[in-house]
Image (cartoon, rainbow, N blue to C red; front, side, top):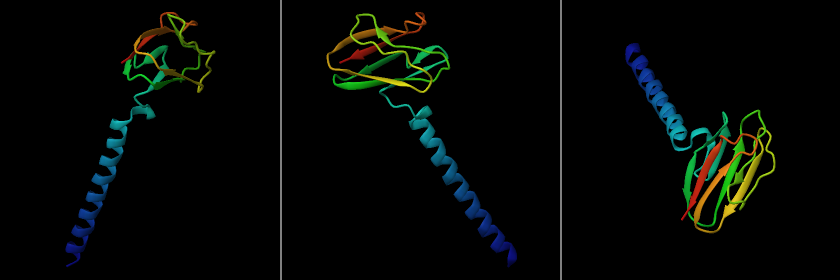
Length: 117
């Protein structure tokens, strides 16, 4: 009789564990590092994602997660952020369709592209 009790408790614990683990995994897959489709992370001296396609009228936010200072400047001088320290953000609203290549003035090998449709 006591074995039936332990079996029931064991089943409940296993089911709860599976539900908790699957919920955590699902959140991580949907939103890695709390980034949205309109966020570009600056980390390890790279822009991630390196290329992003959005609709006209979309705000793009760059977030510096490096300890080094970075900025974001378009090749065509359409937008330019101030220097961004760790944790600081810069947002620009892309109103016109086109391709916008950009770079970090502090580290010119850091490049990216926003494609606006």
